[in-house]
Amino acid sequence: MLRFLALIILLLIVVPGCRKDNQPVIPYVYVNLQLYPNTMDNIPVGGYIYRPEGYRGIVIYRLLPEEFVVYERCCPFDPEKTGARITIDPSHLTCTDSVCMSRFVITDGTPFSGPSPYALMQYRWNYDGEVLYIYN
Image (cartoon, rainbow, N blue to C red; front, side, top):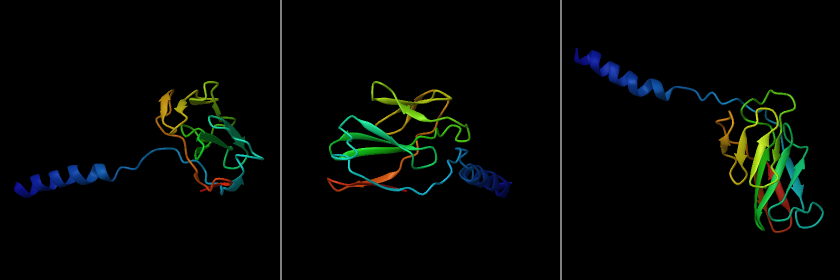
């Protein structure tokens, strides 16, 4: 009886840890981009630009003079939906998916309304004061 109880306790601990995350997968597209946010590409603080790179494009938002966020424009809720793209709202504080209408906080990509429980996919970036390097 003690062995049976130990087996049940072990299964209760191990089995939930084996569960897979069911977040939809956004297809991988290689991104290696260089921008000049102070000159040619002009991204002011609090401003943004859209670029065609990535799966459905990327959006680059400038938080501070030396700080950016770079998101995939494909909504993480249903990446297979044709025409679904994230756009920055007029307030410049949030962004919205054009199909499911999920809304995300621009500073970190977390969802705050709509059906998506998933955050926006972010790209890595480095900034040397002149060139903004965006990659995955």
